[in-house]
Image (cartoon, rainbow over all chains, first blue to last red; front, side, top):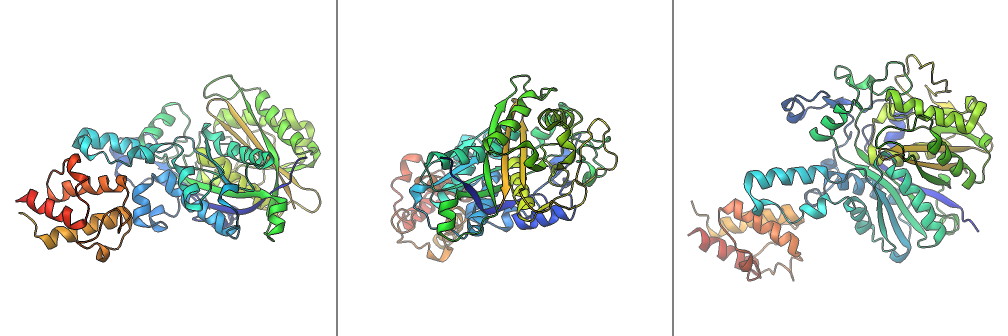
Length: 411
Length: 82
C-alpha cells in the first residue's frame, strides 16, 4: 500500500533570500536575484556575461570559520539549507538509522577543484591541502548535511544536471515507500558561478547577455528572452511518512504525491522539441499521484528563459494537458532566482509547496510581451488558487536529456 | 627572522583555530593533538602544511607522527628555524 508522504520542513539559501521564508516572500514581491559580478575575475577574463544570480546572503555570514574552511561553497550552501529545514521541521526525534539524505548537485565542487589546480601549478603539490578531494567530490554536499544531522539510513546523491534535485525528491519518495527510512531530507545545492562555467554556457549561447540590466535578464516566455541566468544556492525539504509526522504532531506543509523520471536520449544539451519524454514524465507523475489531469491547477515550470527550451516545455505541457492547459496557473520562478542548476528542482519544489500551503501561485517577473508561440496562463502577480482539491507539479529538465517531475497536493 | 617559542605557539594556535575552530587559548604546550584537541589526521596535515608556509620551515611527513603534543610541534619549528 502506498504511504502518504508529507513535507514538514523547508530550508533554503538563494539569490533572493538567505532562508526559505525570505526567498518565498521575495518571490511574491517580484524581486530579482540577478546582479553584476563584482569579483575581479569577471572583468579580468573579459567574459561575455558579467552578471549572475549570486546568493543574497554569503555563506560566510552564516557558518563558522572552520566549517567554511572544510567545505566547498556547494556544501556550505547545503549545510545552511539542511539545518534550516531540520529546525523548521521541529528537529524531529528520529533514530539515526531511520534518517536518510537524498541530495543532488549538478556540478559539485568546481571552485575547490580549480583553486587546487592553480595552487598545484603556482606553489607545488605540498600546498594542495588534504581536504581537496573530499571537498570537491559531488557527494560532499549531501555528506555534509548527513554528517551534521547524523543520518545513518544512507546518504545518496544524484547527479543529473538541472534535473538533479527534483530527482532527489522522487528518490526520497521511493525510499520512504520502500521503508528504508522514516524521515528523509531531500534537496540540492550548487555553487558553480565560475569563469569556466560562464565561459562554457556562454559559448553554447545558453546565457542571457543583458549585462547592462541583470534584473530583467531572466524572462521566461517573453519574446525578448535570450538565455538563462546562472544562479547558486541550496534548498532542502524534510519529508516523512504522514504516520510519522502525525505521531509527533508536526506541521504539514503539503503532500508529496510522487514523481517520475524519464530521459530523452535525443541530444546531450538540446531538449527533444516534441517533448515526448518530458510529457511522459509529467503523465507518469500525475498517474502515480492517483490524480486526474484536471486536478492539476498549478505548474512550476522548468522554463529557464532560453528561446528553445521554453517552447519545448510548452509543447510537452500541451501534449499532456491538451486544452485543459489553458486553465492551469503556470509560474516560472527562475525569472526571480536565476537557474540554480542542481539546486533548481529543490527550490522550485519549495515554491510549489508554499504555493499549495498558502493557496497562492507566485508570479513570473519580466514578462512584458508573451511569446505568441507559448500561449500559457502565466501568473504575473500573486494569484489565489482557491479552495478544494489542489494539485501542483514541478518540472525539471537537464543536460543529458533528463526529465524529472514531482507532484504535490495541498492539505 | 626566527620566531620565539611564544610567537610560534601563538601562530600555531591561530592555524589550529582556523582549521578546527578550537579556541586559541586552549592550545597549550602540553596538549596532545589527538587526545586533548581531537584533531584528525586530515586536519593535522592541513595545519602542518600551513605551518610550513607560515614559519618558512619544512616538516617532513615522517616527522609528523612524532609531533604528539603542541609543545613537540613548537620545539620542532623553533629548531628548524635555527
